[in-house]
Image 1 (tube, rainbow, N blue to C red):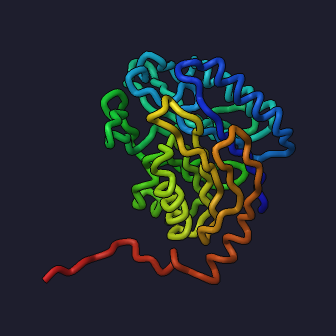
Image 2: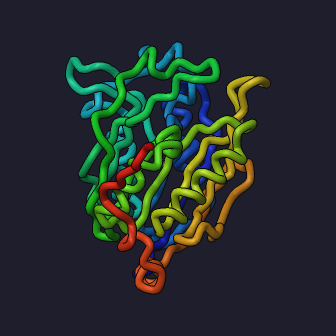
Image 3: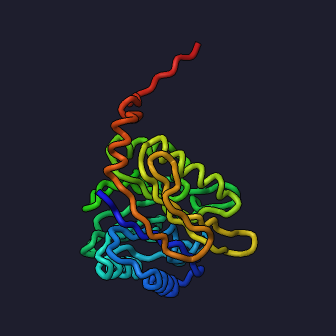
Amino acid sequence: MKINVSIVQMEAILGDIESNFYKVEKLLVNSQIRNTDLIILPELWTTGWDCVNFNKNSEELYSSRTYKFLTKLALKYNANIIGGSAILHKNNEKDRNTSLIFNRKGELIASYDKYHLFSHRGEAEGSFLEEGDSGLIVNTDIGKIGISTCYDIRFPELFRLYAFKGVDFIVNMSAWPEKYVNEYITLVKARAIENQTFLLSACLTGKINENYKFSGNSFIADYMGKTINKLDKEEKVLISSINIDEMKEYRLKMPILQDTKRNYKVAEK
């Protein structure tokens, strides 16, 4: 099965949700995408990475402008949507860094709350938000998709579980710092290689200020860690395709997952 993918790479305008909606629409229109199966947005594209204002910019999930915008986007392009992430909450619960996933009919089929909150190197995501309770696999008409957000990429245990549960590919939505871009590229490729799966990366680009810039470099790594297609730092839609059947054939020839033990033991003497 061949899947057509459109990955949006953009610079988020801090705190300006409506302007960021307009930017996404413009990028998609200018890219003239046709027959796409999946549109992926980056982490916090609605408001930008702005920890101290996370709670100020939070929306209630089901009544949010983000929910309504992504519904319309799915219907307009007849595409599944992995909606990057936004600061959202349900009822009176705490704010979370949440990704909304829609089918082609514009129906919300799942939501993913970032499992690992980044609170290192001077950042404080975990001081303002509540972490998620689990990873997420979404069943869609294009296969089983493992969902992850930014910092999650550093935790291979989650990705191994996705592989054992038979995902067809994994998505990582990110607002990764520019000065650590080499780490990110290495981690994405490592997770792809060790789990024999495509890994689709959607990153913010641009900057908050001169001291904090984002990596850009959205790209697709295949099941051997090879780059299928990539962007640099431009605001653009990465249009590409992945072949799930080729990946499954490779797994039969190189049965690493089959040979992996489910419960490892280590002796210490």
